[in-house]
Image 1: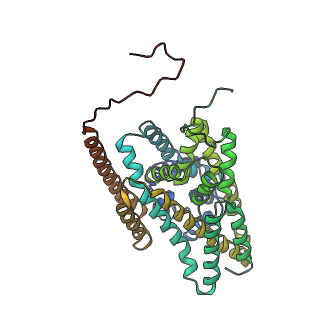
Image 2: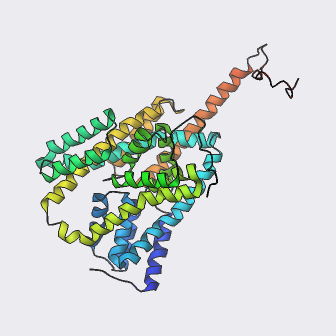
Image 3: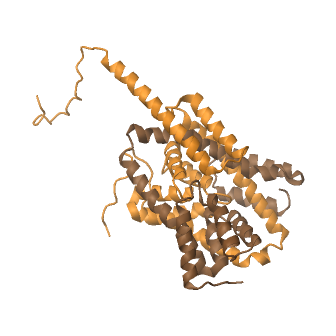
Length: 183
Length: 228
């Protein structure tokens, strides 16, 4: 199934995602509810299942989670839609980040910038623990595979802390264990 | 183009990417390993394996990347690339982060219907997800060491970190609110602590001493031009 949109609607999609970009504090996923409202409810370009599939595919595939956005665009309007959605969600935030990081780099030693990096550090560590917990939660909640999954999670953490092995190999082990039904 | 790249931000000898192409390749490789999130792999590759950044630099860049709008890892790539090769580097790093995974995910989206029928595929995805969780948890444990020496001190660091963890993992507060609320609190508290430190340092300096602050001795053979 490959949909297309007239150029005018494609432009509208692009402009809508441009405005969402500056709202995506904490990542593009924080704007997913708004994208759902626009693509599914308001325009009817996608169904609920299409929307969920796009997010699941991006989670399963390698790379940043923001890639669910071009998948949504792809479902709406093929490759042109993917390009419009991805460029829209990235351009404003990227330009802003570049400006802010350059501004901060020249003032690295001012109290305000030092306070910023020091004050944000514990929040960042807390967020990372939360991300790990939320990713592990579905495995812990599934009694059929709980032991295997917990063992795999613990083994991965241990190998990461104690060796310099590339993550690729751990992921390959995980995929093999999963394909064999151990996880 | 043989224009010399801008000097790296650090003075100490440190591994760094040789060219924008090297950045592009490094970011492509790490992005392709990033199942369930790229962050842990980025830390692994850039800090542990390539040594381009220290743990502390990584955490600081990531903290900024997180508070800005846009995907965190994309902002992070941009800052790292910009640091080494300016705009070209930023573009190389972002392209590396996005291009190859984009092709993979679009290919998946195009062939999703057929793939979903195989239980082994679903199982493999689950296994990769569990590994992703382990990678992130290990990364969080490593990040703990970067809080040593933080101007906030252990008590405030613990309080802010635990508040963040419970807000997200237990109460499911939207990320933007957590980052803005607790991030700004952390910023304000750190600014206050730095002011306390500076005031204490200023008081220490006021203690009268007879020793004049001596300039470092000029190297031998550089007599002319030395003032006084």
